[in-house]
Amino acid sequence: MTPSSPHPTTKDTAAAPGTPSSSLSPEDRSARIAVTVFPVLILAAAVFAFFVPSAGQALAPFTAIFLGIIMFAMGLTLTVPDFALVARRPLPVLIGIVAQYLIMPLIGLGIALLLQLPPELAVGVILVGSAPGGTSSNVIAYLAKADTALSVTMTSISTLLAPLLTPLLTLWLAGSYLPVDAGAMAMSIVKMVLVPVLGGLVVRLLLSRLVDTVLPALPWVSVAGISLVIIAVVSGSTEAIVSAGAIVLLAVVLHNGAGYLLGYWAARLLRQGERAARTTSIEVGMQNSGLAATLAASAFAPAAALPAAVFSIWHNLSGALLATYYRRSAEKHQGDAS
Image (cartoon, rainbow, N blue to C red):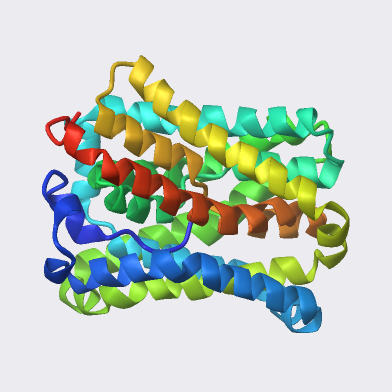
């Protein structure tokens, strides 16, 4: 999750990713800076929460509000063309959404079994896998010279499907570890995600000129919001970090890396072009960890939110590295728009 998508780039996905930084829109420049410094800020927030847990615990009752603000900011970045892409190029969008909700949840279960994680951590890993795509994937796709418009559309559709699919997948895959109230989880996602996103989209449609003036600030709203969520989560999980921090980090690295790899090959095996496959790779591997952390903290033990907190730090670091690798070889695939 995190920085809002660099929206102007979605209008010209072939040319925009190569645009010189001097000609970027203010929103693009803000998003690039935000996604670059975000891992540092998140790491600083986690360290602060670990050593000053009392401050973080004071924020815990407000994590749902923080997430709602983040998702409202995401809604403000969306436009009708983001959804029109579904009609123009339905197959790559469908492949991305199916891969998102099939690959990551099953990998999460596999890792929980492989590492023999205790119930709270196993549920946390599975919940991360069952979450929709994170908006930071849009910025990473942009930096990687992938298909930014496709990334934005995949994130938007997977987010809208989250109230249905995230609870069902969590119940199916994690129900054997801990009791899962899928109905309550669905309502939480509707309140924290669906309503704010749709609200932001409506405001963008009605007050587009006003929203355009605040777009450069939206990535920082996301950064601030997820930082506050991480502070709240980590402050309640200090004992779990001491006892299981290493195994959680290993689980997160495996989960994220497998998502990148399998997302890419799922698209390639279904005869998608290189740029679409790279976009699917990024979209599948990067999760809405803020949503996963908030749901885990409210529906399960605080330790269940730890995998999402670690994932939030790691997937931005790994995403930046992956973007660098993809960008260096992007010229070979400039003509590959599918």
